[in-house]
Image (cartoon, rainbow, N blue to C red; front, side, top):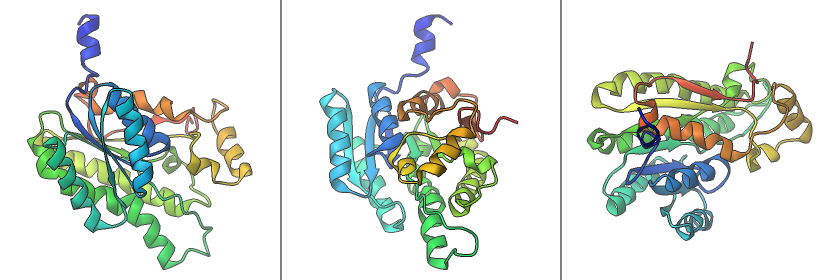
Amino acid sequence: MDRDQLLARFDLTDRVAIVTGGSRGIGQAIAEGFAGMGAKVVIASRKADACEAAARTITDAGGTALPVATHLGDPDQLGALVARTVEVFGGVDIVVNNAANPLALPIGSITPEAFAKSHDVNLRGPVLLVQEALKHLRASEHAAVINVVTAGIFTSGAYVSMYVAAKAALLAMTRAMAAELAGDGIRVNALAPGTVDTQMVRNTPEAFQQLAVDAQLIKRMAAPDEMVPPALFLASEASSFMTGQVLVVDGGMTTP
């Protein structure tokens, strides 16, 4: 395989990618990276103005992007997201389930409402979105699903148990999806980042941020852009023989 053939494995030209949580942080970086590789990207997050701003950044750079304000915790909005994507771009090739709810409460203070709010976005939404997009993924020749979880699923999850539990369940669903959908030519993998310099992380107490960095062999937060090459690998033909796996990019947080 020569250089051009190898690089072509990463090409996403004309593939349609839905990226949830795509207006900031890891999601925005992935959306911009995929657009740079030729994908038609749908930016989905709760706030319409944030979606529009993220899409404008891509189009101003010469890429193709569509903003669709969507709350992943509202099942009725997921069908509308897929319908709008298909209306504009004609199909769905890639789903990146990146949106997350970082709600954290210590054991003993978890309420039914908080538990539901966490799991609605971190688990139920991603699963239902894949189901909404399923017939279009089945029709694609390059179907790929990336469920963004967290390296925290390989730790105790202390004080962030709702978030980590939902993401651990999403990894279980990733493996089940991969097994059930392999016959349809749909690959499903997970990406597990470590501590990334995002607004979600910066909104946590500084002491918690420092503990997360200290737990890694690489003693810093990752830049959101550092999650783009791993996501591109999972979305493209570069990982054509990979499904049902989790790619851990955590700075050595979970190294034994």
